[in-house]
Amino acid sequence: MLLEFHLLQNHAPSNLNRDDTGSPKDCIFGGVRRARISSQCLKRSVRLSPSFRDEMGEADLAVRTRRLPDEVRWILLERGVSEELADAAAAKASGFGTKEGKEQKTLRTAQTMFLAPADIEAVAEVIYEALQGATSVKDVEKLKAKDLQASAELRGWRPITADIALFGRMITSDAFRDVEASVQVAHALSTNRMDHEFDYFTAVDDLQGLGEDDEQGADMIGDTEFSSACFYKYFSLDFDALVANLVGPGPAEGATTEETEAYRVHLEEAHALARVVVPALLRAAVFTTPSGKQNSFAAHQLPDAILVECRPAKTPVSYANAFVKPARAHGDADLVEDSLTKFTAHVEAITGKYSLKADPRLWFCTTDAPLEGARSCETLDELLAGLEVALAGGEQIHA
Image 1 (cartoon, rainbow, N blue to C red):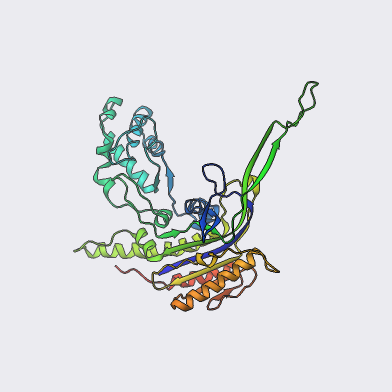
Image 2: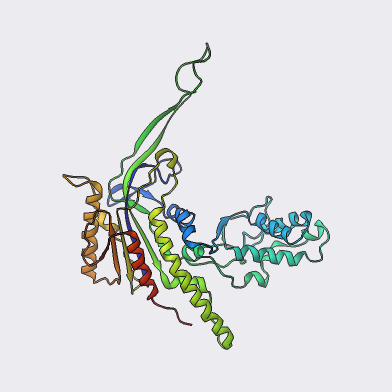
C-alpha cells in the first residue's frame, strides 16, 4: 500500500528555510521563481517536532550526531569502567564514522550519523568486552577502531527506530547498516510567484541619552529578507517498506519452527508500530512549521487543505503541476482560494484521465471546497480516523 499526503499551506511573511546568504530558499518552476522549503528541512522539522514525539509515546527514536564517543563513555562509566580507561576507550569510538576506522583528534566521529539506541549500545558493548583485562591507558591504546567496528556483533542485524525506518540513513561504516527510506518528501514549492522583500531594522541602546556625550542614532542597522507564499507539500510513504524496515530480515532457509514463530511475532509488532507511525507522521506534517527566523516572523499557520490517498498500486503521483501556472489573487478570489481551485481541478483531471485508484481518498479543507471522488472530512480527527481504518485493513507482509 502506498500512502500519499498532499498539503496546501499559506504562510505569512517569513524566512522558514534560508540559503547560504540568508535569503529564503527558492527555485524556478514553470518558468517562474518560487519560494521553496527543502525536503531536508521538512524532514528534520517533523522528526524533532513535539507532535511526532508525543504521538510516538515511549517508542525509542534515533539521534543524528557526531557525539557517539560521548555516549559510549557514559555507558562505560555506568558499567563500572574507570574514568581514565573510559576516556581512552571513547577515543576508539571516534573511529566508527568511516570504513577505514580512522580515529579522530577530537571525541567526535568523522561524519554525522543517524543512530538508534541499539546501535550505541552495540558499540559500547563491543568496546566494553575489548576492555576486559585492560589495566592501563596503554592497553586501551593498542586497540584499533577498525578491528572493533568489524566485529561480528556490530555486523549483525539490530532493530532500528521508527524515524530511521521512515527517513532512512546512509553511513560509510560497516558497523551500521544502511536503510532505504520508506517515505519520500518533496521540496515544498509555492503555488504563487515569489517576491523577495526586505525588512530594514535598527537596534537602539535603551540607556542612550543618559550621558552628556552620548551620540544619537542607532547602534546597529541591518536588513533581513523574507517572503510570503502558499506552499504545496507532498509526502509519499510505502507502508510495506516501512514495515519491512522495522521487522528486519525474514527467517533463513531451513529455519526452525521457533525462529519462524519469533519472526511472525516481530512482524505483527512491526505492523502495530507502523500503524502508529503513519498517523504520527501526518499529524506532525500538519502541525509542524520549520523554525527558521520564527522569533522574528512567527509564521505559524496551519494547512488549508489536506488530501490523503491510499493507493493499492505503488505508483506515486505528485500534483505539483497544478501550479505550473502560478496561483494569484484575482477578483473576489484570494491566493488560497485560487490555489485550491487549481489543485482540485488538477487532481480530478489526473485521477480521471489515468484512472488512478485510491481507497480511501480523504479530503479535509477549512473552506469546505469540494473534491470530486474524495470523502470529505469535517475535522482533522475524522481524516486521521479514516486513515487509521485504512491502515488496519492494509496489505500485509507475510513470513
